[in-house]
Amino acid sequence: MGRVLVRLESLVDERRAVLVGGQAVSFWASYLSRPGLRLPVVATKDIDFEGPRTVAQRAGKLLEAEVRIPKASDRTPLTGVVTFVDSEGDERQLDFIEAPRGLNAQDVRDTAVEVTATDPDSRRKIAF
Image 1 (cartoon, rainbow, N blue to C red):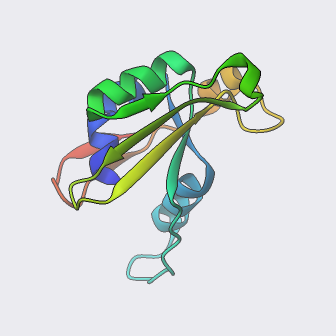
Image 2: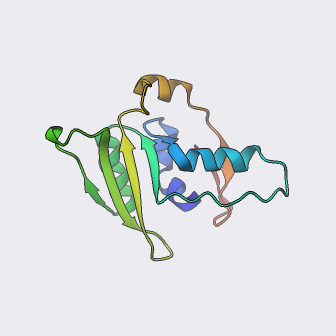
């Protein structure tokens, strides 16, 4: 996930996209755990972000990925789906949603906690 966040850093820095869902829970569990504590791997197939369709389109360009934008008639909370192949050759998916159920999108962005962490692959500091 770290490599994906590095490539999407400009979107996250501008608070146009906020990590939500299972990957966010996994991140916080790892971030807040005691050093050396081995947590079970919580893998989710996709990575969920709060963000509008324009951000999904921009993420697609940054990842050189396929972007699907739902039609209004699709009746879905998704604002976009970005499908790409990661550095290990596995297909991954980013789901962009208008807002987590029961929350306001602007409130999510305004109250998001910015965290700076080191990507283990690149040793680069990233904020998200």
